Image 1 (tube, rainbow, N blue to C red):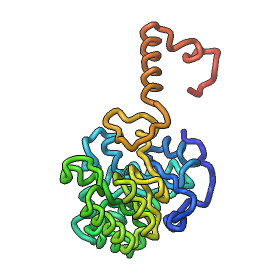
Image 2: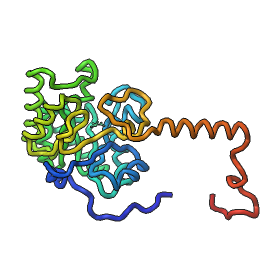
Image 3: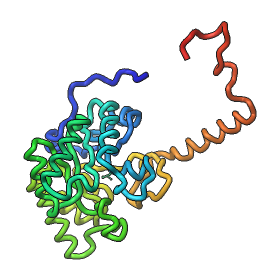
Image 4: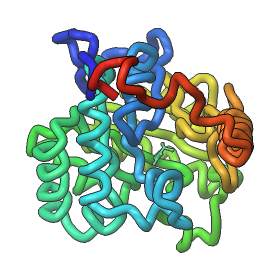
Length: 280
Ligand code: KIV
């Protein structure tokens, strides 16, 4: 049974994140589940229910495996597990690119069915109309420029952006377009460090870096990468703060050998007529 969440009536909103521009760095992580949201709640300013969930938890090869229903289910779990951080839910590929009308309908569904504080979508100049329309519908939007995982098939892989004058100009144009469209913040992923730092100086909304620059206004990592749970490719820019793969592997090895040797269950894990009570 779920225990009580810490009570707080101050859920951080998108507006508060926007006002953190240039201040103490904004701490962000992805979260997809109730228990992880519970654990991260006291430590982060923002939880992103990223469409990386399709790869990390569902085993898809790319984030294109995410659906609106998947994002909503994980968004609901993270909202149940957190009380304080701003929760942002990713708009999956196919839910917003077609038109501003489609984008607003999908964003309304995500916010309506999860109660999250904001949505995130990938794109710059090309998605400015969608961002502006969602903001006009009173739903805060986080942008996402640079390496855009939803475009990985089009781009021929996970490629760093900003190596040529042309791509630097495109990145700056994207950042300015996202800001002008009314986004409250923007993720900058997989870019040359100096380009991300320059964008952070140029725009008035917080920049959240991932493989970008320490000069961004905040940082984000995928939770499973950060705690060493990811079983497939881990991007070069990740710093691993724990090795949960080893912890789980060792626990599974011990459990398997204790079951085979009839060591588990021991006397304290079984019931007799005289011990315990009726509660499991
Ligand atoms: O989906 C995701 O996890 C993301 C972050 C990496 C920013 O978009």
